[in-house]
Length: 155
Figure 1: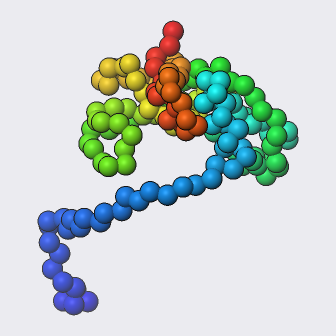
Figure 2: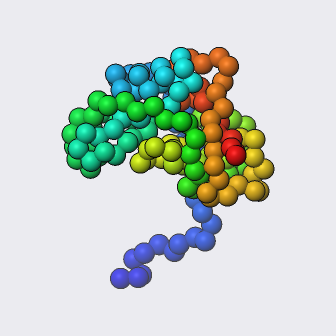
């Protein structure tokens, strides 16, 4: 069987596939309310499941566990705990910042899910899981998750 297989090179094959494209996507009623609260009030909100009580941020229309529709909006403090992170040290055209920078999953106080976002005002070599973080909002906001510029360490 082996005599029919081609010899495998030890050099990796690299293929360039340009794939950056721009398109518009509707956020729907739930996403619009979430992003509007960030834009208009510098406020993070989540949706609470009426069955199990789980709070989702970013909010979703149905509970992932119970499959019931959610409609109870919860105001969150914006503070949370870093549960995991990565440091980006290379540039791609679709990235929102110049490297190096970090982003992580922030377990928001009062929520059961984490929010992925960029970290700032922190030494990239001193980021620690368990750090307490709070959002820094842009002055000019337009209704995007990037209206939160980054999360910084909080006391």
